[in-house]
Image (cartoon, rainbow, N blue to C red; front, side, top):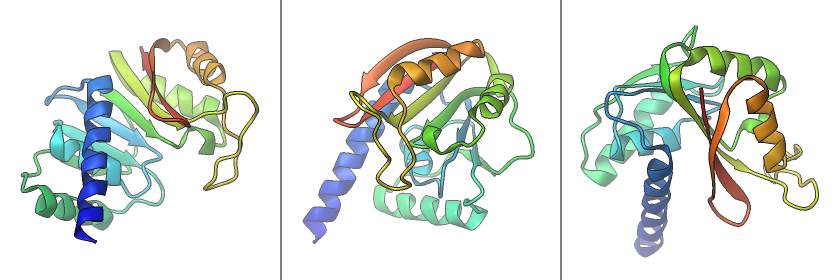
Length: 182
């Protein structure tokens, strides 16, 4: 059992490193994660690759959830937590990066969300999305049953509000990373 847990943690560390190398944020950056759920990935990422400030946005997330994640990763890694955290801020503003992990297909009003994202980003700021996508035919997300977008559909939505597609990277057989810059 311990071997399985260590193998899963090692795979997660590799995914975290891959995501960091795609996002390349700095220690002084202010980042928001929208649709973060309980913030597991965000806390893990910032434990290994700290930032100055992390805003977590999701109706599910509570401060005690984040503290539980911080405590877990602190114990598992032996690393010290160095990131200031804000849960569900009233407004998002002055962000260097915005992350969206496997949640783009979940948003009901993506046009409104894109306007908020655009206004929250600093000039030159980036949006990093990790999303499962349709490739040949429209697929349904296994977890929620909602339709998954094709990569060009996502790119088109972001470009319509003035966010420029910078890069795409394949994550695995179902998911990709997308990067957009303001």
